[in-house]
Image 1 (spheres, rainbow, N blue to C red):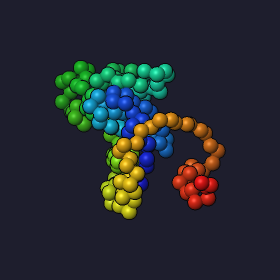
Image 2 (image 1 turned 30 degrees about the vertical axis):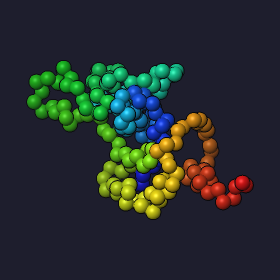
Image 3 (image 1 turned 30 degrees about the horizontal axis):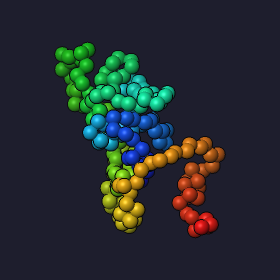
Image 4 (image 1 turned 135 degrees about the vertical axis):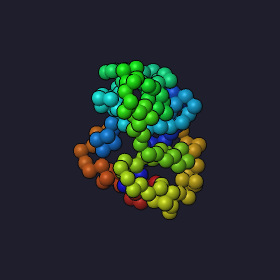
Length: 173
């Protein structure tokens, strides 16, 4: 029921995506060609096929105007809307508007992307984090830019690792 940080929106150029695994959920984090950030579960609504693969080389993360399933070619706009599949034409019970990509609730606070994976009862970000929102203002986060990333696999409780990096009262300096 809590909002989780996925980093800073400057880490995504317009018209690109990255995949993010969050607590076992395979997510597409994308910034469309107009600069709008959206996050979807990385599965086709037809047969739950994985839609996007991990980019193998620089440039592979670029998006066209749509995302297409490699299995039966169901095609989605970058806002998650399903384009009408030819095979479903004439099927009265099928509703295109009910079969778009499943979007993950997100909130951008001063450039920082937060998501909430709760199925229901999501408390608004502004209510849940009211005491620290002024800190985001102080950090001038909307003007920050991602310049370097490091990925490390750590054999430890992730909460302990994150807490260690957030509490620098014991750091020299």
